[in-house]
Length: 574
View 1 (cartoon, rainbow, N blue to C red):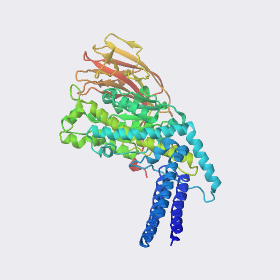
View 2: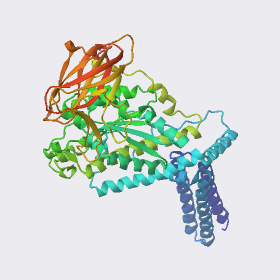
View 3: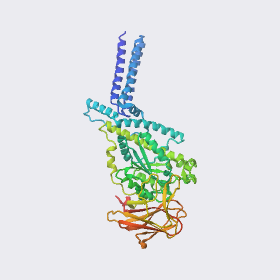
View 4: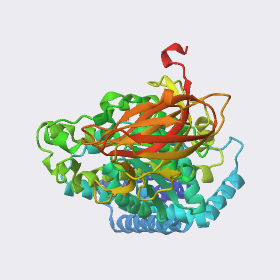
């Protein structure tokens, strides 16, 4: 009769053994985020089978009216042993992978990283597995490994923080899917982030934009957010200048941004380009210039709205006149306040986004929403980058986007989408001074009475300076130098800063009065306005003479030169 007891013990031993062996294999084979889930699922299946066998045995014993004491003691003992081993597996995982690594395994996102774990070759044996485990332990103890583990923890906290902010600000759960209409190609950003994590250097971001960015609210908050996530230095170089647009920066970008030392360049002219009606060709010009830089920074579009339009229940910006097409054509990440809040704007429920004395600008809330969208975007790119770095370090047989980033980044650009001519070798002498300006300054060799350098500030944080002439017949002269390029001739343009009361000037290149050009500075908008004043100019030294035609003020912002090159239309390219 008591022969059943050894059978019960055998069942218990078999169930516990198979479960513990499975636990051993699964912990040893555990790979972050994927294999861990598989091993736990496998353990649960074995435990269910084990429990079913025990329950079946107990039922048989019950039918034979055998004492259950021994069986229950054996079952509880085996279960206790099993739970003890499970408890030990946690410290073991922490010892091998570190507490941060364990948090990574528990950290699941809605958007999984876009890579696949690769299996080692078939000929791999136990020794190869042990070598791989040693490699994992050595890497996770290294400076880069510890840095990655710290980033994983901070990303998890930041994700929870973003979720809480969304609730506090009363935003809906679909806000990010609307606010990021195009994630674009972020391989350049991921390559920079990899360098930042491996070397500990600063992440450098540059911003070109108008008065929205000049306020320096969302850039400053974004800088602090990125410092928290990366646990290192982040520098946001805000070169925004109020009342400028893409036409000005197409010539003068390098005057205000140290482009060759930037990892990310953000374009924020969606409002000014739309109001001025410059079209998408200037935005495309800047885009191509950035994508062709030798240091390969990441280009991003930041699209705000105009305060007065929000008040009028309108939500138009440059996205509606070519910006959206450029983002898709060049695969540029696009962050859009317009797409995020347009439904509220048209319903008249976005009044809390409008601020400023004339209701032209945006409130702190609008800036914080844009920063939140940017933070969400950067968090997911950093997360994807760290996963790929971990996979690349721990699995030598894997293939990540880092393997093809350099090749893709140096590939030729597609034919222009909107442009028919290309501004080549632009050079700019500017009097405008951004908050962090480096400039080839516009300085005259002669300035008669009636011309003065005047600081102007449309916004409290603006730092513009202009050469202002307000005396009829008064003359100012500037020297410029044009470098040769492929035996071509250059063009010369001047950029006025327009106003409702502004007058006109006559512009003469090298005393060639027969080819003098008249430039008018009057407009309902206060904005930089480039005007071509001469073409077919040979390389070399030249003098630009500007003469006032009335007592109405003329405000000079910059003198520019460039070579115009015809480009094939995308439709004509087979």
